[in-house]
Each structure stands twice: as structure tokens, then as C-alpha cells.
Image (cartoon, rainbow, N blue to C red; front, side):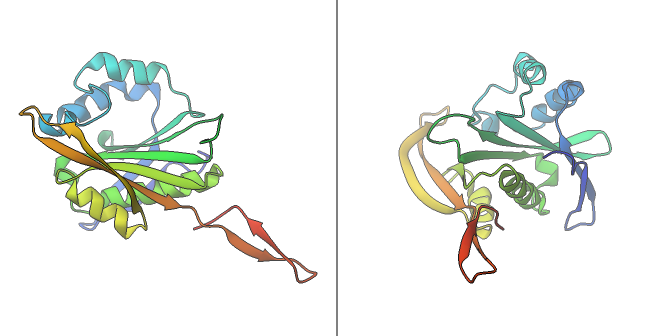
Length: 198
């Protein structure tokens, strides 16, 4: 599962970035990372990441059966946070949710695309069959474009799901990607469906 980390990718400007799972010792670095995310963008996140206590709770409750957080770093500085969320029980246990946020200084270099691609591979290794991601319409245009390039397709729109601090409403677009199944031929000429893809 996580034995393939750390991984190294090269951005469009030839910057070398390391991907690895979050560990408890990343707490301080994550606090600093989220302080560099504009307040307007933090407003739309699930948790109040401006509160160091939230990050402390994450660090103390790491559970890779529920959430796999992957960090992108240049040397010891965190420049992006990505995560794969999943359920281990119930009717939706075959579905994962992905979330990605990148330091503004490192956007438009292909980093988010690399992270999504990495989460796709991670989801496949976990046997997941579908990924979903939520994007705020008119606010996260670049994210929407990147996800579509990786074959995520809009499946639902939740009207007026998000409000900004001025009271303006925005829709939430739910995109999904099927982790395609391949047919593997058997010796007797029959076929069997293999639950690995991509």
C-alpha cells in the first residue's frame, strides 16, 4: 500500500517534489502550510484548518484504514496536501473521495494533477472501484478542469451548496471517475473480470 513511498515527481518548471504519507511529526509543517492558503479558500474546506488544534487532532488520529493523507514536499517544506477518504464498511465501501490543496506559489505547474494521479493509483491498490471529488462552481475552475482531464465526469450538482462570507451562493459539482475493470483471458478461451485498472 504505502511501501512505494516516498515518490519523486518533476513539475513543469523542473522543480523536484517528494510525495509521502503524513506522519505525526508533520503537525507543525501542516500548520505553516495552511497559513499560506488564502483565507477565502480556507473558508470552503471541510475543517477550520486555521486552528492549530484541528491539525493536532489530525496528527494524533492518523488512521490509514479511513484516510490516507499524502503530502508534497520540497526538502522539508510542505507545499500540498492530498488525501484519499474511504469507508471500511457498508454499501459505499467501494468508493473513495479525494481532496487536494496546493500552496498558491506552486500552482499552475502540474502539481495538483500529479497528486490526483497518485491518489488514483493509491485507490486502485486499495481495490476501490470509484472515486468522487467535490468542486465549488465558479470558485475552483482550475480544479474542475484538471479533474476532467483525468476522466472525472460531473455526476451531480448541489445547488446553492456553499455560501461565501458575503452571502453569495455557489453550487457544488460532484465529479466521479470509474476505476475501469479489465478483462483477462483464461486458457480455455473464457474471460474473467479483473478488478484492477488504469
